[in-house]
Image (cartoon, rainbow, N blue to C red):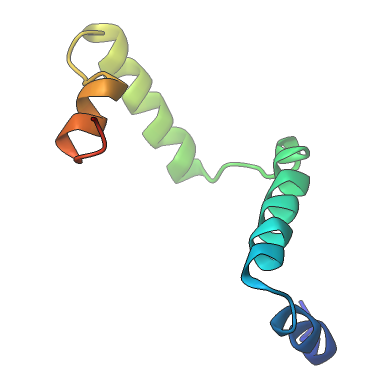
Length: 75
């Protein structure tokens, strides 16, 4: 990937809100084409292991609500 100093200067001139929006737009453009991002063998192996553990005991994990509460995000 080449370095684009002009682009960096232009981004630096954006407000924080505009930069956040730019990051969101960039992420959305990537997620729309996520099928083009192949998983590494290590990632595939990890996902297979997690799926196997879940299938062996679906109740072993935590609910999203419990995780949020542990992290202090629940009200």
